[in-house]
Image 1: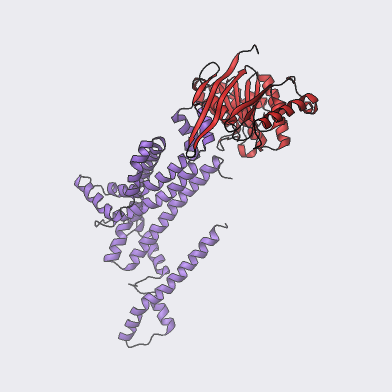
Image 2 (image 1 turned 180 degrees about the vertical axis):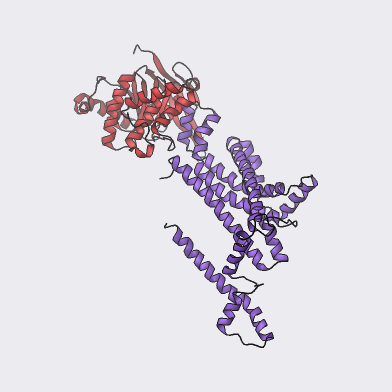
Amino acid sequence: MSKKTIIKAENLSLTFQTNDGPVHALQDINLEVGKGEFVSFIGPSGCGKTTFLRVMADLEQPTAGHITVNGMSPHEARRSRAYGYVFQAAGLYPWRSIGGNIKLPLEIMGYSRADQAERVKRVLELVDLAGFEKKFPWQLSGGMQQRASIARALAFDADILLMDEPFGALDEIVRDHLNEQLLHLWASTQKTICFVTHSIPEAVYLSTKIVVMSPRPGRIADVIESPLPRERPLEIRDTPEFIEIAHRVREGLRAGHGYD
Amino acid sequence: MRSVLPVFTVMAVIIAIWYAAAVSMNSGWAYDQAERAGKELSFPELISNTMSQDRARLPAPHQVAVEIWKTTVEKKVTSKRSLIFHGWITLNATLWGFALGGVIGLSLAIAIVYSRVMEMGVMPWAVISQTIPIVAIAPMIIVMMSLMGIEERLVPKAIIAAYLCFFPVLVGMIKGLRSPDQMQLDLLRTYHASPTQSFWKLRFPSSMPYLFTSLKIGIAAALVGTIVGELPTGALRGLGARILVGDQFGPPIRIWSALIVAALLAGALVTIVGVLQKITLKRMGMLR
């Protein structure tokens, strides 16, 4: 890839000290993510995929190795608000309207009022929630709430979107729909996306690069560059190419003793 | 009005027990009087006698009600015998103590949530402060205040009220300010939010249900503190003084009417906080 490197991890390790002894959450992770890529991290629970994402976000500190985000340390990247983070739960504030929730990062980062209003409008359109600005979270379905939380992460100018199983708690029909929307969003915003999931079809459908991880210690078992085109209708999931990649992901998971 | 029926049922039961107790406690005197007059008391006579003694050991509820009516509605509020006058003295000190205790409790809670040192240093003392009987500390506070030259009765009473009031606010608000889950705190971290921002945007709003619950306990505690502060040193004004005077010199009916008025006052204060709680939480979308 000739594009600019956005995330670069070298021999990255993270060991948690627990009462039962050290837990090697990540061991010798080497990975490069280029600008505009959509990278999925897949693996069984305990493989360190979420931990890796949290290291990128400066929510966990690596115990060895080196990582840069946007050419700086994760801490500097967080300070310069280089990324938006989407959690598994929408985590909207019940006392704020949808518009108010999306304004939250903008208020914290000191955007002007006029700018805030304009941005809220724009990102709500982006996630197909135009007209819901004044509604409160409890008035929205789970899928819509998660879309609002994505809008919240898109509202400020971060080039990177870190997503930690954002659709994990949603049913399959909603999830298909949101996956499709996420691809549109990715195409229209040109962001670099790191996406944690435990669904093979989701990973293959969305990604330009799939990172298969294995547990105990958390390592990268395989990195698959997807040959699928960027333009992907849902039906692409029935093509032989798609099935072949999914097969390779499954093999990678098995090789990493992911089914222990 | 589903919530009213259980309240009235319990009240009816209490009043029934009260009447029964009044008959049994006042019957001794009634029998005495009848014996001296050389008369036999029939059962209806006994009942009507125990319901209407001037210095009944336990005045019947309707006697207390009449006494309260006489000392509130029929007396001028400036009169020393008006319970509204005494109630206002007590209420005033209660509100000052409540405000003081609320501010102290809230500030300590913020300090403790944001500082480990404060938690380890202050929390044990806060707990210890509540193990000391308030009746032991109240006279000392009053004496100390007068030694310091503060003649105003309001100040020591408000301090005693605050002493009882701050603790429930402190404990409730520590829990409330810590109620946001890790994910929400992480989210603010990804925005690189300052501690002040995380307080006003997340911690404080999340703590609202806890705040009002502790304020309800706090305002009732402040009233108890004020009344205790009025008891020990021969205070002449306030519901506490009324209770003490009734206890030592006056007929028992005065204690009872002062007690009932104090209870009604406490009920009203808690209800007001409860209404504020409902309005606030509803507006914040935390109540549906």
